[in-house]
Image (cartoon, rainbow, N blue to C red; front, side, top):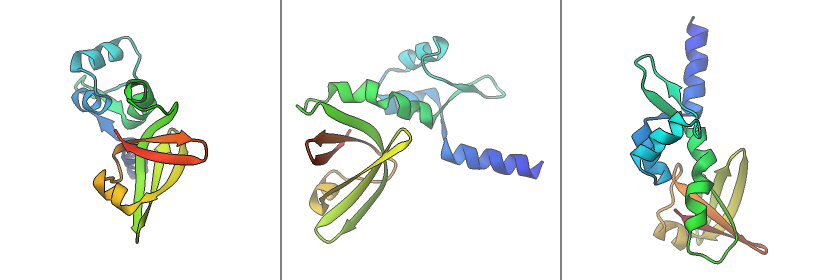
Length: 139
C-alpha cells in the first residue's frame, strides 16, 4: 500500500492538479468557459472523491499555445508557448530553459532582460524564433 501512495505522490508532483478557477486564470479565459470545456471534453479533468473537477498541469500546457500565442502583438510567426524550467544568470548573460510539451528549448539572453521580465521557473513564457535567434517573452 505504501508503494502505491508513493508512486501517486511522485506522479502528482510532476503533473500538479489545479482547480478550474486556477486553470482558467493560467489560460486567461473565464471560469464559465473552462467549465464548458470540461463538459464538452475539450480539456481533460479528474474528479475528486467529492465530485469536484481538477485539471492536470499537462492539460494547461497543452492548451497554452492556443489561448495565448495567437494574440501576441509581435511580427514573429514562430512563437512557442511553454513553461520556464530554469533561469541561470551568470555575469551579463542568462540561460533560460523553456519546456514546450515534451521538448525543451534553451535561449541565451542578457541578464538585464531576464531581470526586467522577472523570469522565474514555473512561469509561462513564449520563445519567439526568427532565423537563428530565439527571443524570450513573458506572457
